[in-house]
Image: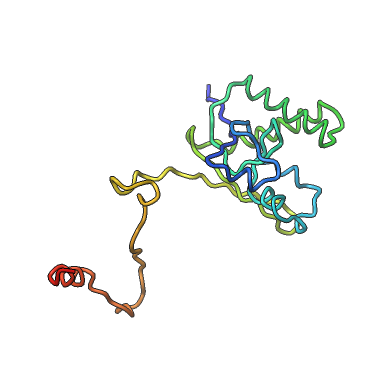
Length: 191
């Protein structure tokens, strides 16, 4: 039997509490939540509502938004509870005609959320939502943890680079600098 995986809201820093008018609590089961925008004039969204549209996953308990989710193992009982939480919101707050219809829609949303979890448990997923020609499109990306970086460096500077190498089609770059020569000259002059 294949393990069940679902996304959970993740808060790595307090930014979601500033970005969204109603942030999700960390650790809620999550869905993409595009259904919250189906009847809105998306071109008129501004500020926090626009941020929620562009990148907000939705926690099924609070209907709050989260920028990131983490892939997590879930039991059938937890999945069923998430379906019920979302179905309650769909019926009571969003106008589903009855609880049976709301439950079917909630199950569909959670099934789609589970389909995003084909990556290892612990993977962090971000979303970018757009509207093109009246259609809402969601794009997802998995964020990977960086290696440790430069040994002994603090977290801020572990991946700092003084230079970046760029390929060019030109035979001779426009500018040249002999960094080793400059360093030797500086060392020999005592500077």
